[in-house]
Image 1 (tube, rainbow, N blue to C red):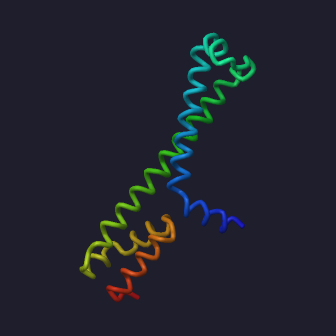
Image 2: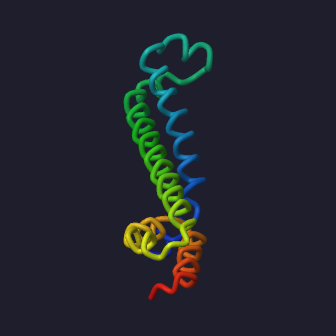
Image 3: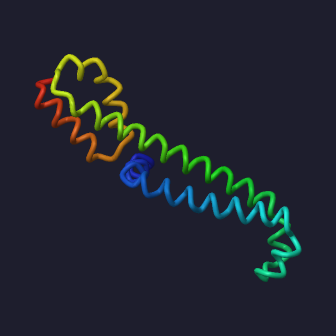
Length: 127
């Protein structure tokens, strides 16, 4: 079961990390504003005071979501850029130097990139 879920998440990691970052940013800002300006927020936005009592926890959840979203977005972009740069080479020796890193990067990316790596391996007659 967890293998299926992780495969689904891996296929849509770019969009999910952007959504997580946006939700984290909004939640972080709401928690921060709720902690610093309690009276104006409850008057202007008509927010219940009981919700503002949870501002610290909302701030913490927002911070965690923001950091997680940025981290996954960063690793996706870094792995994709590395894979795309190394696949462009036509020299088998250069490709073999970083073959382990390429396989590791392709494992964390969607299946489209694993397919691209296997096609490049076939064209360079590796394995």
